[in-house]
Image (cartoon, rainbow, N blue to C red; front, top):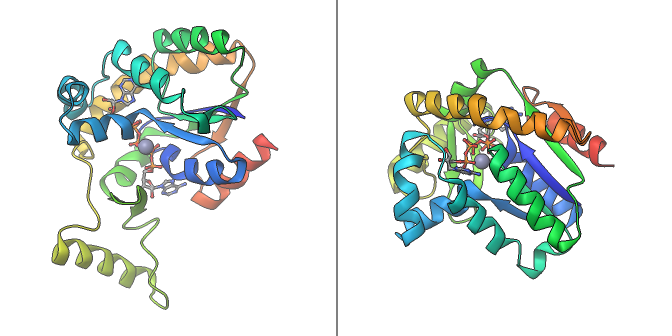
Length: 225
Ligand code: AP5
Ligand code: ZN
């Protein structure tokens, strides 16, 4: 399968991706993750991308199209892929179409993580990431599992782990309420038209992304079955 996941910041793209990836043996290509890795490694690409990312604005089409073009050449992506956070502008979508046409393949489904802006601040400011594995947690909605602990204790453990070791779980630099505003603005102005672009092709499936994580997974599986 060749899938595109589109949705605003915090809508659950990165949370559902590993589940879909395992279920269908696909490769997971997340431009945000690739860009953050480039920023951390201070590569020329990372140096160019950092300023826009810190402000919650989009990186230029040329930069992201370049990394996707490169990443799609991986042998593991030949059978199928999940594009998480790409394309984010109509220009990127058109470039992707050109790339796929050359390979003689097509996008099967675009999953639209539809959700109200109002619930996203809580999701974004409560998100914690385990850098080594890329796993995503949430202080309230997805605390790390310690057997036998209730929800409140889980949250305390999560905060404790971070404070004591300073390492295992980190927050993204752009996960603040202020930067979220620009990210949402970019989403509505530049990415919403991408959903219309694919709707015209009749391949968009709208999800209820405000539902609990497991219910969204069930919806995704239903759409893809
Ligand atoms: P990117 O990394 O793509 O960030 P984003 O699109 O803003 O999306 P997020 O990663 O914030 O949200 P998500 O949907 O993955 O949410 P998650 O599943 O983690 O991009 C970052 C930056 O890179 C951009 O701002 C831009 O500068 C640049 N960039 C990237 N791609 C680009 C492109 N193509 N073109 C140009 N620039 C680009 O969930 C969030 C939290 O909620 C988690 O804590 C999770 O545990 C929790 N959660 C998830 N699902 C649920 C649920 N159903 N119920 C309750 N809680 C939930
Ligand atoms: Zn993500």
